[in-house]
Structure formats: structure tokens, C-alpha cells
Image (tube, rainbow, N blue to C red):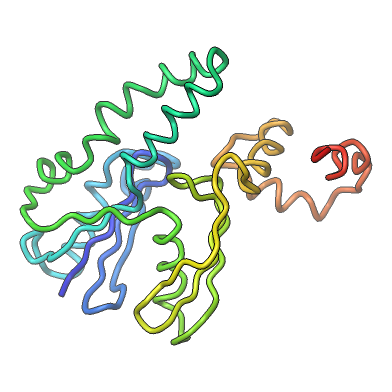
Length: 221
């Protein structure tokens, strides 16, 4: 059985192909387009995965997308309402991409790939949890996911047991360690969702001169 995984329209679009429960190939779209952090529909990456396996899209039983777009859009709309008027410009800048791409992903998959099989939308943090647990050598393990934000979840604790991933605890937006990290990334002049690794790498070379300015006691009063 073949399962094709797709991520698109956020950053670093990619595709991965699973055969009988094992990842046999995966690729990022930027490797083919030469556009750094390419977030377009990963047509080239998908084509590479299929050609590598020697199959066609008709041999794929399921296509899995890495989040639930409608649930995520619900959060964005609610946040817009709660933070209006400050959110007005960012919201209307984002709307065209949502209408033309993100909310239409199911029809886009069908149209671009000619796919007639089943399409599954996996909650974002569960996708992260699966990507680390299923390829691991463990049959049972604790799984901890920390991200900026998925649909609503920002942190998740799970129990991986055999083929099951069982949610135990979670923290929701706007409480997010990932977004706090991105805030400091932007504050330091780096690009969010691209340069966090630079901040992490540079941290080891710095001195805590500004510790008192950004201590948790002052941030979390």
C-alpha cells in the first residue's frame, strides 16, 4: 500500500512516499525549483517520489495533508475579530492566499494530480508526532511536540503505542513557546520561519548581557 504525504502553502513544501508503513523517499520542492523555502504546491517533489518508486498516482491509496485548513482558518478569523483593528492589514493581506490556495487544497490535489482516491487531513501536531514516532525503533514512547502553532495546538504530549498515537495533554494558541522564539528572531532582525536556526546557533557565542531586560519575570508579569 502506498501513502503520499504532502505539505504546501506555508514554507518548505515537500512530499514523502510511504510503502507498507515505511518511508521509501521524500523531497522538498525547493530542490527542484531552486527557490529557497519554496511554499508552492510540490508538483516536482511529488513527481520525483512517484518516479523513484516506479508507480503512478493511481497506485496511491491515500494522500495525507499535514494540517486541517478549515480548522486553522477558524483560528485566524477568530484572532482577527479579537485583535481588530490591529489585525486588519495582516488579515486582508493573507486572505487571497487562503481563498485561492489553502482552503482549496483538496480540489487542487485532484486537479493537479488527477487523483481520485482518498484524501486525509491530519492535525498538524499529530503529523509531527507521527513523523518522529513511526520511523523510530520504539514500540512505545512518550512524544512531545512544540511548534509555533498548528490549527490551535502549540504544544502536545502523546503516548505512542504500537500503531496508535494517543493525545494526553495540550496547550493552545496564543500560549506558544514557538511563537515566543519567533518573536525574538524578528526582534533580532532575522526572518521568521526561516532564521530561527541562526538564533539558536548564535546563542552559544553570545554573553547574557541582556538577561535582565528579557528575563521571564519581566516578560511574564
